[in-house]
Image (cartoon, rainbow, N blue to C red; front, side, top):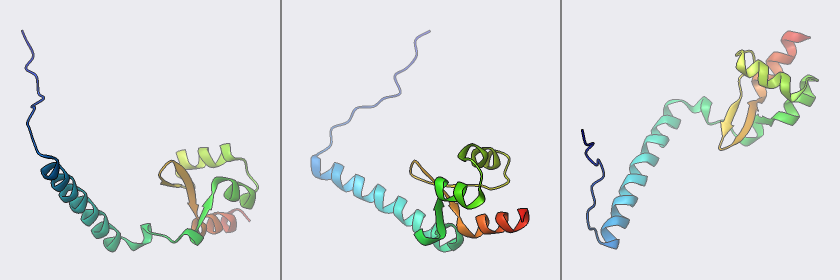
Length: 99
């Protein structure tokens, strides 16, 4: 049994391709903006975010402990690109619950 090739090749001009890409990006950016407006808590400002190192020092734990807490949903992290951050408010809450 032969498998049909799912790829379709078409010819398109450079300007048409550019326009298709612009429309796709515009549509996706609109979805992202709508999601941010619907859930503003997720769009925390940079000053409300702590790095793994800052969080570990503040809580006096290792970065491995932070990884385990995130895995166990005790202190969840936020990823921006390939970087890991923690919400300052959640870290302070965790600090108060331990103290």
